[in-house]
Structures are given as C-alpha cells and as structure tokens.
Image (cartoon, rainbow, N blue to C red):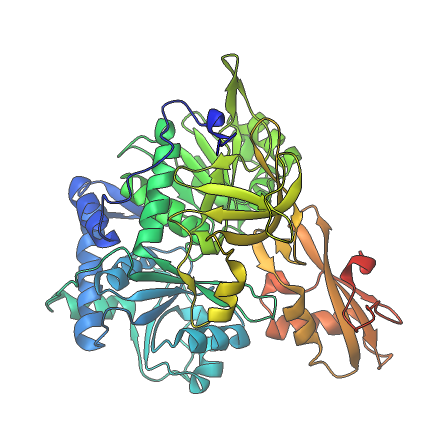
Length: 544
C-alpha cells in the first residue's frame, strides 16, 4: 500500500530506523556519558551536572537502591518530583538496577496518589518534600515501605528554601544522604533487553481511574531513534541547549528532553516552576537556547509576559509543540516574536509518545508549512478507520490508529482495557478523530470520547462527576470542555442540586480537595435537569 505522506518527509530522512542499535537504555546511557563526559548534561538554578557527574551520582543512587532497599529488576519505584537535578539522577539510578519507574505528578491529591501507588504495587517512592503531605494522608492505605525525600536545594547547594517533610512520615531518608551511603557500595547492573519494562506512565481513564501504560526499553529506544532520524537536520550533537519547562514526569518531556537530548549530548536547562513566567523569561535571557519544547498554553503564556520579546532568539532553531493542539494564532505570534516556526507533533502516553511530527514540506523547491500534526515518524504507520474498523478514504474523518515499535506493551494489570484499545491487526486506537488531507498531512479533527484537554493534560469528565457526587446536596452533574484563551480548554460543570444554599464557590472549593488543580471546574452552572438518553446515559453533546 502506498503511503501518501512519504513525499512530505524532510530531505534525506529514512522511512525506517534501525531499532537494534541498543539492547536497553543502559547501553545508550553508558555510551553517552562516556562520549560527552566533561560537558554539562543538566542545569538548574545555576547549578550544573556534567555527564560524568550524572554517571557517578546515579551509580551511587542505584547502589543504595540495590544494597539498602534490595530493589531488583522489574520492581516498581515511584518518582514524584518536579524538574530538579535530582529527577534525572534518580531516573538513571532506577534504570541502572533494572527498576520500573512509575512517574507521578507531584501536584496529585491524596486520592489520586493512593490509586496510582496501589495500582502499580509500589513499595518505594522518591518524593518532593512539599508533596509529602499528600503521601502522609494515605500511606497507611498503601504498601509503601521506603520514602526518599527530595529538597529543592539538593545537588544545587545555593540555600534554596523548601517545605519540610511532613512530620507524620517518620522513616524517611533524604536523597543526598542516600547518595552518600551508596557511594561506598558496590553496584551490579542487571542484563536488560528491549522487552524489559522501563516506565509505568499513567494516563486518564474514562472510568475515572488512570491506567498504567507499560512502556519498555524498546519502546523508548524506538522513539528516540525515530525522533533522531526525523529531526536529523536540526540536531547539533554536543552543542544543543534545550529548555525543559514541561514536567519531566510527563511523557513528552521525559522522552524528548530528558532522554533524547541527553543522548544527543545537549545541555538541559531545567525550569522548576514555569508558572513563574517573569522568572522563566529571565532564565531564557541567560540561556542561549537552541531547542524549546512546550505546550500551547506555555507558548501563549511566554508571549504575554513582559520582556519575552526582548530575548535574543538568534540561537533558537527548534520550537516543538505537543501535549495539546497548537493554536494557529499562538503559532503565528511565536514565529513573529522568535523568528522560528512552531512545529507541532502528536503522541500519547501509550505511544512513548511521538507518533507524528510536522516539519513542513517542500513544494516546487519552496518550503511550505501546512498546520496540523504532520506525518508519521519513521517505522510508524497511521490508519484512519470508521466505527467498524474499516479504513476510510483519504480526506474522510475517522478514528486515528497507530502502529509502530513505540506502541506500549499494554495497560498494567488490565487485560480488558488493553484488548479494547487495540485493533485485531495490531493498531492502537487513539480515541482521536483524525483526517489525512489530499497533500498527505494528518490533522486531528475532534476527540472521539469526551476528554477535555487542559494545558496539555487529559481531564476525563467521569472522574470529576464521580468526585462531585460525593458532595452533600448535589443530585447529579455532567461535565464538558469549553474553549479557554489561557488553557486551550476549561472544565465546565452542570449541576442539579438539592440544597439551594450551595454556591458555585462551594463546589469549586470541594473539588480542590480531591482533584488536581487543572481538573477543578472553572465554570459551574446550576440547571434543573441534565439531558439523558432513554437508558439514562448523560447526553453531554446536548449540554454543549
């Protein structure tokens, strides 16, 4: 079958990639740290770690995990930390003992944290000190035995203040103390292969409970190689400087920044709190960035921050947007201010994550950029299908389905969900409605399900409705996404109440106790009745 998108591949980019180059990320790691040993790998708050230091520190941490905590291959270890120098050191330490890293959002509520720790069967967690309150609330309901705490100043040593560890957690050890203990211990690295599990990447579930996408060493190696080949004309090995502001626990920054650009020998400048836009702009002014990855809301926020248009962008050559649709108005303004086109990509937690990229194309020797998610990366096939699994004609809409070596092994301990998301011929059903245009470019038309995308994070209405159902004086609720200038989409909640005294603020306050900030409804509307089908199913489309 001919692939109408191949003609849009960048010049000299291969259609397939060699996936046999590395047996595991361990082999990739050792080659990279040797090759770039004296160069800066990660920078944060002005403190830097060379590749050689990342090697030494992660070895010490791995030795601590192996000798003191008896972590063995395949064991799940949770990492609940923002973008700090400790994140990559802990990550490579976990990988070096063959552990499976469970990436956890440090902003999670106790309820969300409890589900993820129990579902992944975690006994050891590396956690940011300000997040320990959430852990303390639910630790008795989990199997957690080992708590390693991370402070903002760890490995930075500039006296940065940080909230203390919750006093209810008695048996904890600080990350730097674990490193000191591990320094004198031996490490025996396991022999790993591509099928070994690497990450459990939790993604929203339509039932309101998140599912762990099982990503192997092979999945991530494949996606690194696919990105490397597709972006080969834009990579300066050993010389790139990438700003990492999207969270490293999010699959986009995890694969692109934390792993790929590490492999390319780049300097990763970590932004711990990108919400502090004024400080973010100051960081950028002091960074001759060549690469920037972000989500639409981040690009938009920077563009609206005073002083951003005064930054020297002469070294910037790649701006990559993912996690959510890049709005055309934002892309246009970004190019106007920075002089660099905002390239869009598409992916999911289940695909490690990159499925397609848009670096434009060439028509009659002239560069042309067609907005959209672009074309599949090498060794990847995209198929658009109707509700019966039939491939639709070019130009028609249907569910976007993906096949490639980056597609997950399945959902952790959830055979039914795994079976449900795969087609009989091995394609992953993304749940997004897509279209392949006549020029051979893919576009996302809509979402098949009712998912809401807030600043690149997936929000599922069922989870919010289930949380609100716990509130006294509420009969029922239904939730939809509405357009929002700042976050792309915002949560709008329709409620039927039995207590007339309940206000919009009461509902929002209640939601803040059980939901992460980006899931909390921005709009609350009280109505007399929620439209339903004949079998009682909520009809969200009528609310829209």
